[in-house]
Length: 404
Ligand code: 7TS
Image 1: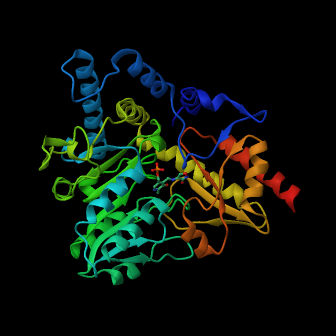
Image 2: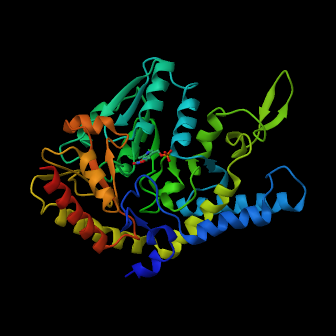
């Protein structure tokens, strides 16, 4: 088992008090906290090797470029991509998805279909809607059941030769449901559709294997996996990245520029215009090393224990309903209490030092499905403890008493 106290000591923010109470940070789905090793690595970059990359012959530029490319290699191995050039640095999941939808604008035709799921974050709905508006393609939606699970028979019924893209999240941010993505990818490929997986909520909990999954694109954010904000990755299969046009034009993404015509650089540079978040990209590699040193088996064991304890303790509260009761779940509990607005509970427990997210979690269609304005979401990380969950349960009970 993990020595949680030792791990917690890696995260300086966790020893803070908020509103005079020890911080209980259960908003990991929004962003994770950062270990000291990540904070130090950012400082070290600016103190020792700060320079622009891929352009200088001078020593610092080469050091920075090497560190950036080493980090790309770490990500490649972490997600088991076949080639390093299939790993694009982005500013986050949102950017990665928009890069792909922008590319598909030159591929989709009126009458083509794009399938999204009813469990998506707005980041994986709106860009596809915009794409459909641009191209005349039609958006189809995989429905879900009362447990928050996607209905696979309905998905299969939506598939046809018109389906050009299927996109679904690996893990739902609002409910924590883990989707059967391998099955979805297989079925989508059987009709010749490309598949984008939104891995934003998966990468903090597990190590995706993009070759085993056989997905065409896998997008995620660095800041949810102990890395800096403003970092992310878009994995794309080489053949797809070669097929898609660049997203942004600018420096570093070209081979040759004249006023008559520009030719584009090879992968990955074709998709990395301008000066990137160099420090962030390098330090994302540090965060990945940190997580791998802890070990994803250990992370999962700890998070399973937290989820089981939180589910059991919360259900002791009268009138409390958990949303997302499917079997396959990550360490996220979304709930409401009869007759009380989620925001009111969130505000009161914040006064008691407990940070959860309340609201629609950028997943309004899920809230509409359950006919609720939002939920209280506690999302756990491996550095959280059973005692913190008990503190949250007591705080929620107190809030319930105050508000009833
Ligand atoms: N996709 C999913 C499944 C997400 O959970 C999020 C962010 C995004 C995409 C967008 O990621 P970004 O890094 O580009 O912003 N989710 C949340 C959340 O659940 N609470 O705050 C942000």
